[in-house]
Length: 360
Image (cartoon, rainbow, N blue to C red; front, side, top):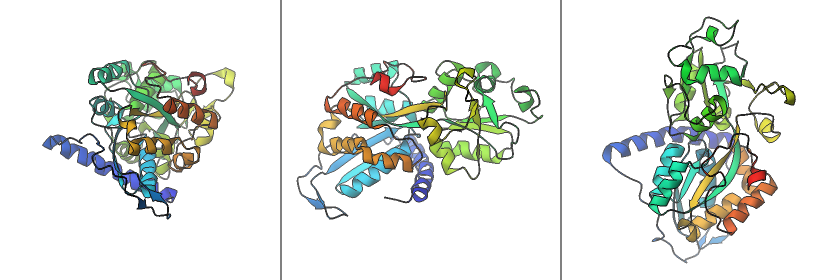
């Protein structure tokens, strides 16, 4: 397997390239065609470790930028073992990915939040049935410029003061956030409205998906958020844990206090450990892939899904900065695939405060 730093740098640079490709595609009207099994063959091919694989074909994946690093890592290792399978991974955001998926343009959709009611209806309209599969946990990370030496910890109430719709055009200085904070311009960066990260953050902090001020720099490319915060002392942004860990030398993670005195935790930093022990609240979340029931009938797709579900491949999840699921949850997810259980366990609702073990 690749060195962790090498892989992270590769996908970080790759996202910018993917964003450029997506932009060019939009300008020319090009669309990624749906994956087909036309190339499938029963010829055996020797893999890099000397084993043989009889799987061939192509798999089209798109969706969340948060889930992209996991998908890229899984695709790379799967293709090493199955060199006649071509796996393409795009980044359109969770919402953009579902639009393609429900139109039958992709086989697998990456999602950093569950499918919404309107997307469920869109898939029904497109005749696309799907299996919802949790694949990892993430710690949605609030980040600041390292020169910001005052906002070491923010309460969820203060985050709401900063990000609520009422803050638009009015809360533009750190001195307005907390008494004692300096007279320093507050500039904000975050994911766009097609992002599942945007949906989860607004739900967890402002109490409703999509409820946010609009006067911030929004981008589906998390590297834009990174650069914005790096370049401005008073900047604040948010994205998935892997993007923080990849840029930890130039950003600072802000600790979060959920205001729940009963748990006695106070300020907690995002990390694999605090997600695993459930102390990082309310910004820890499960992330998903969705596979269509038509696509999973093809050997190359079903084999890739099996690869995701092998507990030992949780090492790839950890390698790119996310938290692998427990053995029990892997087992329950595998059971959903084996039984071809379709639909969403969330029914278009939120995952804030929901424990997967209780609903799977």
